[in-house]
Image 1: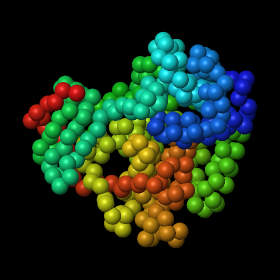
Image 2: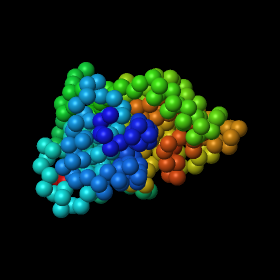
Image 3: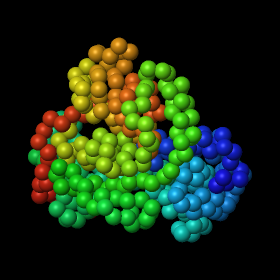
Image 4: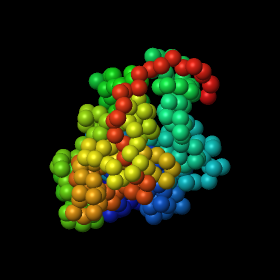
Length: 147
Length: 182
């Protein structure tokens, strides 16, 4: 078991959420409202939670239960007071696919890699926010007329 | 194929682009689920979403592709929900505003309360043709399996659903008339 404080029933509950998650926002919404995650956040420090999360990821191959426990601890850590979070060094956060995004969602500032806004009533005008332009040009926001 | 730069246990396709030539970040996730766990999870979902309202289309869970990868990448890789709007734009999709106008094959998006595209699927049967009076969708549930299900019979928030269809030629890259630095 990745974390001795999590029972098999709790791991099942957590992995039920993690396995169907397609976005970090979905994962955060469901894990942060989960009783087990809230209890973890209440009972452990950020340092402990991130240590649990990192330890859960050591298993190879990684099982769903271990990945779910890691995400649960990560989300629980983001629910801890800001004073505690702000002193955590960057390399203490576990390396998972959605670590950065979950932290952003927790701060209320979800990131975007790209977005498109179609101007109402003007279908030939679009505003594109791209990490990199289609032909490798500079990242930024482009207003495209007739695109 | 290459290893994910930050997560060496995962792999990514070297090249995956929209019709307009923009790079689509992608990943294939490797996690293991034991057989007993898979069976009990399947039984739980079937109970939860009522017999008949959701049925499994594939039986082997995989993290190689997710719902967006099922819809937009022919099940070859996983795509982040944040990139779905870019794909819809570049590939020439147009929103179908009225559910009455939907057709089989339309893309269905479940939009979360934060505006994120929480889930996507493909419309099999519009609500007007469905015995249950709910639209029937085929979709992949995260790293689990593919399901054929009524619009509401899934783990995703169906309070804000969008339908999209390709109606235009893919939008080719155009020289940007102005650039605002972020």
